Length: 254
Image (cartoon, rainbow, N blue to C red):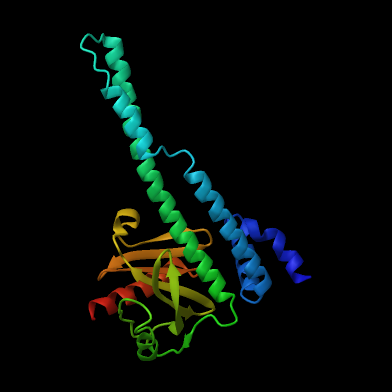
């Protein structure tokens, strides 16, 4: 009966269209209801598939642009009048604008797909009966557990004197890369920290660090020491920034 109350609101929840109070209430329900969590995850994946299909529909291929450019260059005219020159210049401008729009659109789509995939992992993990594979609040226990399971090493911050608690971690697979997925807790909120190989991702995501709002979550990501760090959760932007600062300081001490 409780699920019947919440399921009609799942799409509005995922589109960030509910009130703040309703968002918090539904999020609290998802933390205790695996059925609704699975339903929410399925809807997120469906929305992501639609965005991916629509996003790539109108982007002209490199072969198409090359064919158009070749057809223009194949028939040079030395007696062009002003109107023909103007038309050719306009066409060249359209082709250039299309190439730029395609490149920027691809970046935006890849960035959106990246965050949507992390949202899937975050929601699915917190809704799982076993959210982490290594359960410990001790960074000296969690960090060594990843050795041999992922192709890099990382450092974790000391949390003594802070409001954060390390709950544990698991191996996550994002795109074609394996990385670390750590779960931290502050008050009643769980925050996911993803550590992944950077692998040239600055061209898509940028190297600068800033907090952004993605769906119902706050996110901060940055590249440091050849790795991409993403702090992801429904906690406040201030909490996300504080945990990010601790992680950055730990990397510098490595």
